[in-house]
Length: 335
Image (tube, rainbow, N blue to C red; front, side, top):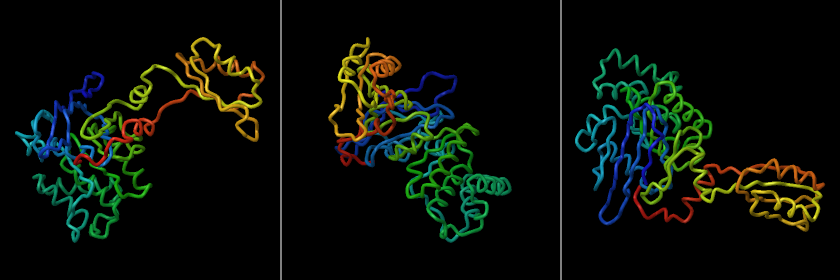
């Protein structure tokens, strides 16, 4: 599948063309096409073993593709892996630090590896520790840090070289809910305020939905769908129909016939007056060829029924996720 953003004046930062990876006879990534533009937050969403990490390793030049190509910040990771690493910050799911050194010392060490002058390195490190909420823990040894603190320090670590792109592989794994909220807000602000491009790999659909501009759905090494949440939701409705859900009380016997007679309505599904609900309510699903929600509401009221709820059904990422991933054979590929 080819996944490209609607054309903008921003140049692509990541371009994957036919990217494919085999481990022996096992296919981990299958003919992947993907374009990510500057300042975008893009989510790779899929179960463990879907091929997300393998794709990231090829983008970083840490694994060579079997076929196809990747261009990151205008560079080929196979030919120029060191130049790619200078422009891209990568945070794996478990960041390694020197446990007996302080948070500040670890950042200064990374700055030294990136040949940042000492004075500038200290200034950047202290500023980043403030940004990620670790200023008060700057001189504490990392061995005493919680999982959430380590992840925030990991984010500071990838930012100290001022990358154009940051790639985060399951960044919220093992963090408490409040820590997740804070980390996601920080990632979002980095993209919006500093123009950093973010590629976020995760199997947590709610977290991806919170911050990503677009999402690519990975199953068994293949990109099955790509787009923003509205576009992906629309893909579930390939017939072009609309579902309106209603709840009424004291409905007359002819209500379903009244609803079916409205132009644009193709099917009316009701749970029946004998459903056993103590308040005499009835749930109705109306399948329409156009949005006739207001006409349905008017018809229900005019029939003498008491309309207690009506809404046009919308699909969230949870519906999308389960539509593509249920029964996908999650353990067949290496991630």
